[in-house]
Amino acid sequence: MISPRPDLEPALAGIDDPAPAARVRPPAGPGVAVADLPRRAVVEFAGTRGGVAPLSWGQASIWRLTTWRGADDPYFNISWVLPVYGRRDLGGVLGAVRRLLERHETLRTNFRPGADGVVQHVARSGRLVVEVVEGGDARPMTLARQVAEGLAARVFDYAAEWPVRCAVVVVEGRPRAVAFGVSHLAVDGGALDLLAADWRALLAGVEGPDPGWQPMDQAFFEREGAGAGRGERAFRHWRGVLEGAPRSMFDYPPGVAEEPRFVRVRMESVALGVAAQVLAARWRVSSASVLTTASAVLLSVLTGHRRVVMQLIAANRHDPRIGVLVGPAAQDGVFLLDLPPGGTLAEATRAGHRQALAAYRHALYEPLRLMAMREELGRERGGPVDLSAYFNDTRGGGDWPDLPAVEPPGDPAAIAALTARTTFAQAGSWEHVDATTVQFITGQARDACELHLLADTAYLPRATVHALLRGMETLLVRAVAAEVPLDTVAELCGIVPVERLPGRERSRSDVAEETPEASGAVGTGG
Image 1 (tube, rainbow, N blue to C red):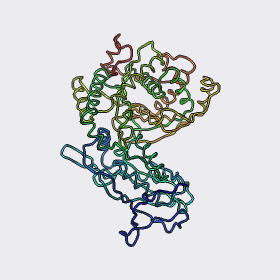
Image 2 (image 1 turned 135 degrees about the horizontal axis):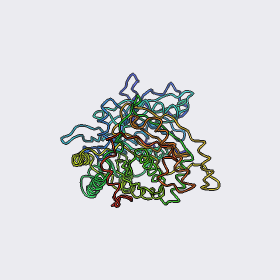
Image 3 (image 1 turned 120 degrees about the horizontal axis):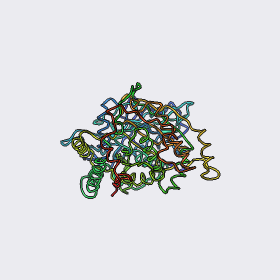
Image 4 (image 1 turned 180 degrees about the vertical axis):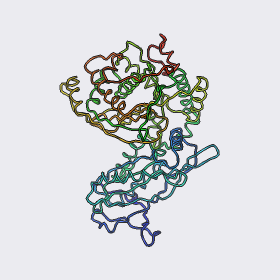
């Protein structure tokens, strides 16, 4: 066993102690009696710097969403759990928490009004209250998940509270897991991966070099030099795409919505994961592009639009500096794909791959300026361009490392047989979701394609949600066996196109779809 480094022992103060200002020594080891553990402790931290800076573009994007939902809505909070590796005592675990706070400025940042809008205030030092929860007979990670959900269920006071809450789950005096409730203003999926790696090293007494790129650095990078140039290129790309996009993918009368209006359904399909990987290798694209294009094809069949516009959530971590940033970097990219009559799924996916790469390359920009451009373009076109269809690939590595082997490899019949394992489940419901009619989301499962569909039931009833998810599986499993013409997808997948009433034809911008020069993939890369 590697002993924690001595300098990782935190300063603790027992909140429930009769003399709360006194230092409380950490328990000596895993044999400590439960009664000796504090119910709460205070971790005191002192980082290398503090300061005030504008919001980074990633922070600004999340700030807009959190303020849109209102001060009492915790929708953009994240529940997160980490195991305690090895036999660590409470002092060592809290010491690792302290070093996370000291190493990563995003965890000790407040957000307050400034002269030109909200700014980030990074504190050099401070204190974080950590709860200590006795696990009893419960499974430590299961209990930690429940505790994390409770921590994330409360809204943050961004001006006065750190954007992270923490609790340690102990069993018979030994820390077994740590639960976090953390704001999306502080982290995104890529940042959580970095924190998880840092956590494991800190528990083992190994500390890497100080992080070289923090949200304050990112904010200044975006306002001058190379960052500003990337923002300009992204701005031009967005305008070019939106000038040719349909005004709305969902330009048909809404139906009667469920209560709550927005539902999220999860499908777990081994067959879909295996088929997507087989097709990605065959067509020399990524599995993300296979799924993105299939989503666009299904939306095209449902809505009648042969030109499909979607937003893709871009991690923005291909830049080496942003790649090590613990903070929110993700923003929306815009994806436009033509699906001409007579085309095939293979042709569409190769074109979709090019369009997805262009979208991801042009997803770093100043959000308020982009919103102003969209409003200006809406006035020019006689109405706003609706961008309420999304694809969000949340997988860290881009594939499913634990998918079962298929024998013989890529065998269509063997892959089709895997559809018997597919499951569906309700994954949530909400009365309001910002600017979303439909969102396809890949989950974190490693042994199956976990695909969620979040939908506005006024436009996509629950039966349609299930049909689209099952249709994704059917489409890709069939494509492993044979080429799929786009004109056969509706019948193959059981998708019933929407009925348009007289006078409710497709968006006027669809006229461009019928022109010869628009019959292939739209060339907006650069």
